[in-house]
Amino acid sequence: MTERRKYQLMILGTALLFAYVLLTEVADRWKNTYVLFTSYQEKKQAVLNPEKLAEKKMNLLSRKRELGSLLTGGGRSFDQSETGVFEYVNANAKETGIRFESLIPIPSERAGQIKEIGFKINCAANYHQIGRFINAAETGAMLVRINKIALSSQSSGSPLLQVNIEGAAYILSQR
Image (cartoon, rainbow, N blue to C red; front, top):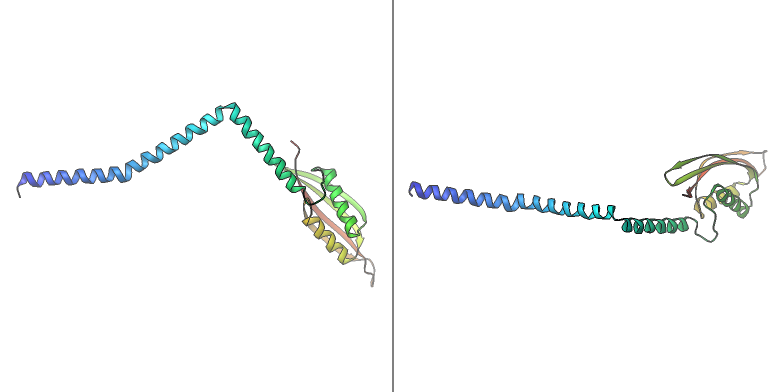
């Protein structure tokens, strides 16, 4: 083989290697860049278009209403407010035969659109009534979590227990 032929083969090999790298590496990156750029342009148009923003806001509001109705579903409807929470807790107590000695609200906290409403309950009831009440409260129409419960016997041989319960309900804030 002549020197010129070796040089031509080396240039052809280099050109093939360059074409291979171009097609496998560079073209893929340019394709990804183009896809990202077109996505950016679409998002930019959506943000700048007031009609699309209004439509998106209406869709979000309808989803919020649907989720709120899921929270209040299950037969009875309770208002998504502090009053509604206490009505809900009282309704569960009435169903399970418990009579509160006191129901005390605890200061509320807000995390985004979710509002936590705390409460303390003092009552006298038997063990099974307390179990039914906690089950009804935590599995009912509102999202309620019992955080703390303290049981003590009123007197020896008596089925009644003195009960102190601390819990919280979570509702959607009215914005």
